[in-house]
Amino acid sequence: MAGLYAHPDYYEIAFDFRDVAAEVDFFESCIDRFGNGLSNTNSVLEVACGPSPYLLELDTRGYDFTGLDNAGEMISHSIEKARDNDIEATFLRRDMADFYLLDRVDFAFCALGSLYLDSNDALRSHLDSVADALTPGSLYCIDGSIDFPGGTSSQHEWETTRGDTTVEFCIDQQPTNVAEQLVRQTITTTVTDGEETRRFREEYEIKTFAPQEFCMVVEESDFEHVGWFDSFDLSKPVSECEPGTLHRPMTILRKRD
Image 1 (cartoon, one colour):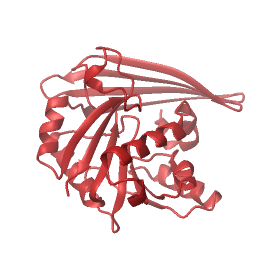
Image 2: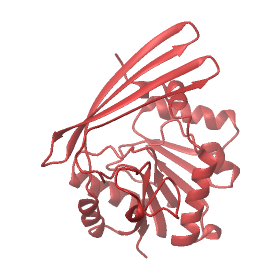
Image 3: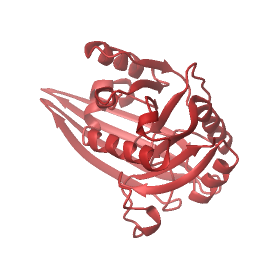
């Protein structure tokens, strides 16, 4: 069975639970509090943009949008979305571990635990690429991807519906190499589209990053670590959250001047 990521319309429905406007509010609060300020922020890069769910909201607020993804289906879908909404945006098919932008941007983010890297070296290269793409003092926000629980198994399931289409989504994560912090993610999806049912399955082995390990790599980069906050809420620093209660912890990095 092919993976869901090759089907942008279904993928977008699967993650339709997000309050995109509220999440962009959080980004702007971070920029205002920790970055260069909203008046100096005009352009945004989404790493692993997928179907570009933030495109319309960011365009409405006046930001120039660049989306980067390694999947041709997602890039084509995003280009069509921008065209249908008369939005001028840039979309690039690139590997997040090693890419280059011709023009620098003022803010970058990576959503939904999409930091798919397989080693510390890949993380270093990724951070170098993002730093090179940012103006000095700009922020990079990473949603999830840091292993705060520490090498544990997990499974998450949910269901979303849009019109006549229902997507049942399950992501299972199992450690495969504790010493190297490697895990296998298995994603299974059932899509009911009218009277048709389709099933998708995909597996990835990726590296998770312990907080201390991640910070050590960041210290070697052109970024400084600003903080960790949960659930897109600056009043919820991760350090004050009860163990096991984290929902979507956000990492905030700032490019050094």
